[in-house]
Image 1 (cartoon, rainbow, N blue to C red):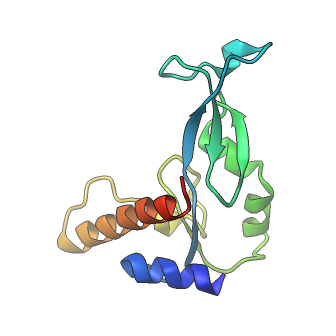
Image 2: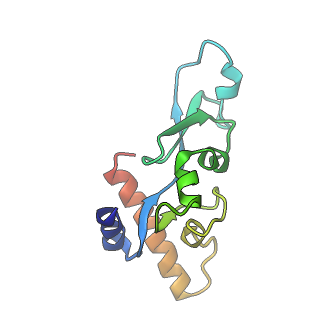
Length: 132
């Protein structure tokens, strides 16, 4: 975990961040049954995958917030088993361990612009480094 925190700090100067969470649609072949539930908003079959550390796959009909709140990862964070922050976006619920890491939608000053850039750079670089 310390190594992960060091990487986040090195990439964009974000302290005590050890993970990032983001959702993406992964294309699939039409399932044999219940296929309607797997057609996403862009009209193709997919499953939702949430972040490398969660490995949680669900039908697209579930919102990112639902997928994370039903995970063991979420339970551990809520129980205080891990100290640190998770970098996420506004698709996720505001929590003490996630709240401060959501992007600022409309930066209004140089400090907010710097934070927004660091946030975006960290998520993109680490997702690429992890192969996502």
